[in-house]
Length: 466
Image 1 (spheres, one colour):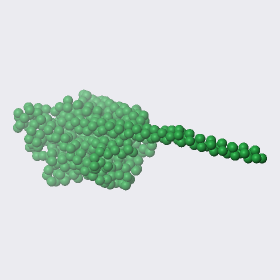
Image 2 (cartoon, one colour):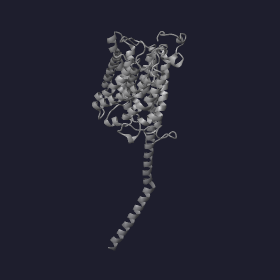
Image 3 (cartoon, rainbow, N blue to C red):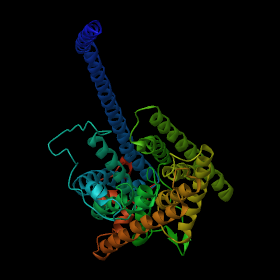
Image 4 (tube, rainbow, N blue to C red):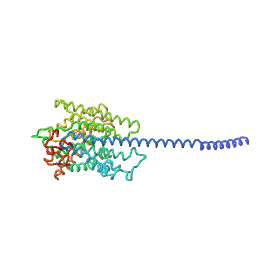
């Protein structure tokens, strides 16, 4: 018995010794190894987050630059499609709606459009002036997907696009000071409020309305604001005679074609850039897929407009094809992330048809839109919103919701800007005089000409190509 008790004591002693040795080994080797592995995993995760933040921020910045460069495209298109005597006025408007828009969007618009989570599902909110989290300078949020600086630059480029669409629709007869007033109101109030309804988490977003990159939120807003301006202003002198449309060709189709091609390239910032995050295989794949649907729709729009115009007017019209390409780009913007490739071609084809029909409709109604801003951006913006409900594959997409959202945003832009333009007209500062319009806005509004040959004949009425 004593033998077994002794053996038990030895076993206990041995066990204790073994446990002590094991604990020592774990403390010296295994636990530190586990802790090191955990630290390495955390470091790897942190490095991956930093890499994702860096890539997302830089790509978004490049996309913002592409969208800002679209201002040059709009300027060239509008200049080319209008009279030479209004060149400086159009260029000036494109510079100033960007400049005024950036400041107004910084102080008011950005806070209205992205007011924060407290206003989810609502109609209106204000998140404050400036860029959240950057009051004291550059800021890095380790949990964010990208820099707030890049986000602001990307969003303000969209606001500038919405504003500059109107420039072409009111070209040749609007006071420069009134254009500045309009531009400030659109970028500071009108666009941000309706933008909040979808992109700022407002009531349309809560309903399930979908507009990936802005067929409705950006382009239809600009298109319908331009339509309001064209209606209140009235047509250019000589545009309609005894109810009949009189063509007033642009003075430089080379500029117009260059402008459209610049816009097409800029759209690769507009649509693929709206993915917002690009890190990882999934994001890279969808970003490039968006570029493909965008390209197919633009090409189909150009071909469709060319063919329809050719059939109707017996000759191929390059201006129809140019507007057709833009129409296809606008139509695909709302749904470029979710439609099949064949559907993107159909969307482009319908867009090309619609832009020709829209131009002819404005002629029938004696509404003067020199560059076709409403047919391209307004009418095809509507089509983009509705096409999302027809061809969209995203979960929860509904044609009824798309119809409601599209109608409300278009009505908001049209009637608010109709009021603004009507007030400017009542104040007597909307439209230039007949004499000033005939001489051209370059000399009457700005005291200079864009082309030396026109300057030599300052008292001209209608120079060659004007």
